Image (tube, rainbow, N blue to C red; front, side, top):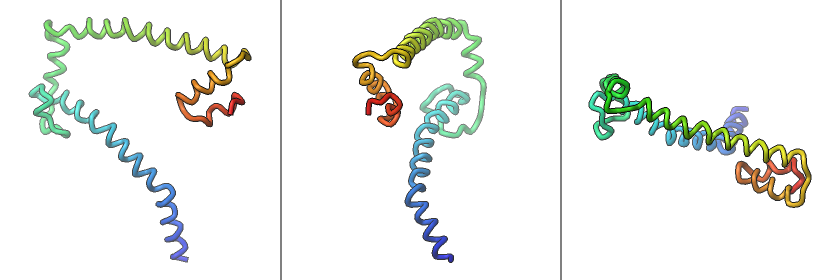
Length: 134
């Protein structure tokens, strides 16, 4: 009975355990740069080169300088970014929703292939099965 349980566990590791290892590697690959930037933000020296992954001493000097220094117009930079990002996002959603409506309501020549190319560029070939193009 114990050998059967051990065999089941080793089978699980062979089938699914590698996925967990890949997921952990992807998480580390994605989170280490974020941790590095956050630790650099709280670094009192204000440089990236003198920053370790985990800061030894924390300071809010960089944030104070960012919001109070008149030579750093963070508010206008943020407003300029919003003036570009909000209309771009709105137009993208508007055009995409109009195209999605056309794909869902109307049947036209080449529509299935076009829809499949859109779906497969976003995810996988399996997502096109509902459109009857596979």
